[in-house]
Structures are given as C-alpha cells and as structure tokens.
Image (cartoon, rainbow, N blue to C red; front, side, top):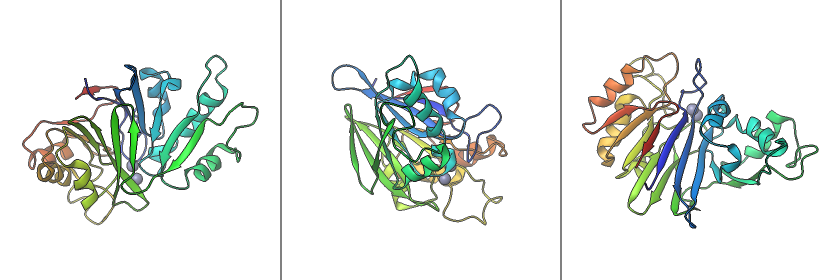
Length: 260
Ligand SMILES: [Zn+2]
Ligand SMILES: [Zn+2]
C-alpha cells in the first residue's frame, strides 16, 4: 500500500440525509514505519462519520481546499474534541488552508483566542496555503495547486514515490485542475453540476462530462466522482463521465476505502 483513501463524506455543497459533506482521510507511509494520516476537508456533518474511521487525535495534518462551509465547517466540532476530550491528550494539529480560516473558524466557534477557554493548548496551528506549495507528509509530498472557484481554492496532488492521488477540490475546468490530475493513479474529482441544468453557472463546478474530459486529457488511470449534491440523480454525472472517459470509473461512497 502506498496511499489509502477513505471517503468520510462526499455529499456536494451541503450534507444530505445521512451523508456528510466533503471529507477524506488519506493514509500514507510515515517515516518511521508508522502510518501518516492526512485529513482533507472537513465539511458539515463530517465529524460524525470521522469517528467511525479514526480516533480524531490520530490525525497528523489537515488540508482545507477552500473556505466554503461544506469543506471546513466541522473543524469547529473537531476543535472541541481536540481541546476538551477528557481522556485523550490531543496534540496541536497543523492545518494548511487558505488565508483567513482562523477568523472564519473563530466566528463559528465564538472563541476569539487560538486557545479555547479553559483548554491547555491551541487545537490548531494554521498555515496559509499558496499556489505551488509543497508539503512534506510522512513519505508523501503534497502539492497545492490553485483552481477556479468563486473563492480562493486549491486542488491537491499527493505523491508517494510513483503513485499519485489527485483531488480537485471544488473547481470548474481550468489549467490548475489539469495540473492536479496529470497522470494520476486515482483522480478524486468533483462533479457538482449537471450538463444542461446548470449551464448558467460558470467558474464554479465541473459536471460529470467535464470531469470525464479532465480525466481523459490528463491521462488519469481511474476516476472517482464526488461532491454530487443530494438533489442530483447520481446516475446522471456517472453517465456523463462514462461517455468521455474509458477507464475505471466510480461514484465515491462514504465510508469506502480505496487503495492505491
Ligand atoms: Zn463544495
Ligand atoms: Zn466550494
């Protein structure tokens, strides 16, 4: 195993019935034989499923693709766990995120101080992301690539040796998305929109068709569609993508694990 991806939540734009919004646990080899655990995004509802897949105190770093609620809001709940769990001595976790997450999160939690009232340490250390940033995570190198969305947003490439997991975050078709997806062994790609129905939106989300084109043109080996909103028939983006991409193709499922 080089990279293991567990989908914690994959509902698009908000949590659906029993379906948390975007959150992914990625496990890579660590430097001393221990697994290194990366949490990518933590949208509304994610913390509920997160407890089913990991003790949250075992998360080594957190990456946030952008500051929409469906990608970061449950960091407010995770802060409570990390700050106040009476039985677990939680470490401070580094959070790589677009600038401003500290103010956004403190507006949600009501704690203006990095150390919540009565806690002994800050649950998070925030590190602002910039285009092209390279982050060492165990034996993985993570590259942050700016993508097209109404707010500053990043996709991530996670390289372990020759194995690549690519995550688009939220984006429309753009050069950054192609850079993220290039030659990926697994492309975890959003498909928030549907052709026709959502044509009046520009620069926000991909469709199944645009995800399929991205995967084909980038030479991705496998495509996993995610971020499908609760009001969309999931077969529609799947069929759109299938018409463009010949390789293995699936819809992301919460609590499923994919091994690269
Ligand atoms: Zn989103
Ligand atoms: Zn978004």
